[in-house]
Image (cartoon, rainbow, N blue to C red; front, side, top):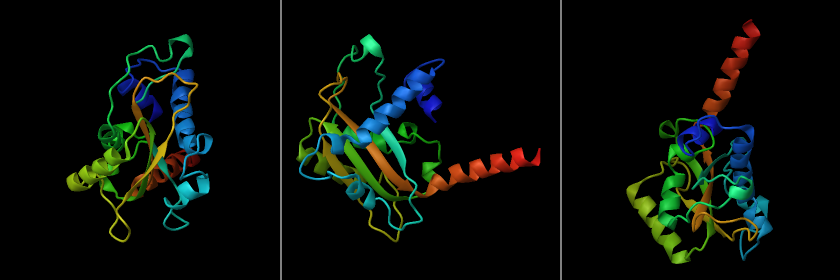
Length: 194
């Protein structure tokens, strides 16, 4: 999935390990941004993750991030600053091509979603964006649980150059995550038969 993102979204012909690692570090730093730059809410990781796991056995999360940029040495942040809105970011987070895993999202249902929005954000924009997503039914939720997208607002790192106004990380609990385990089990069985 990371190579797919690097080639399709970032238009890199042969992504290096450093470029793929840059994607991973971007997602990891965004996932801990509410801890490193605390606000009034969402100051601990347990509080963030607890709402994503409805039952203990369903604890496998997948991530999505948008807009993607690479931070490479002196060229970091040289590109123009993109005008991104909260609605654009939240809508793009639900698109399969922005997920950091390759799973068929259309075939399953979301159990829970947490969006961590970083940047200059007006809370009223967040509320309007959530309403539009609900109206357009962009996310298919399970029938036996609450169909809500939680949002945590986070400040940005003052040490990194910014190439966009707003960025977002999605932590999601989705039923199609089982396909990753089925694929790994299938590959293991093939290897074992040799």
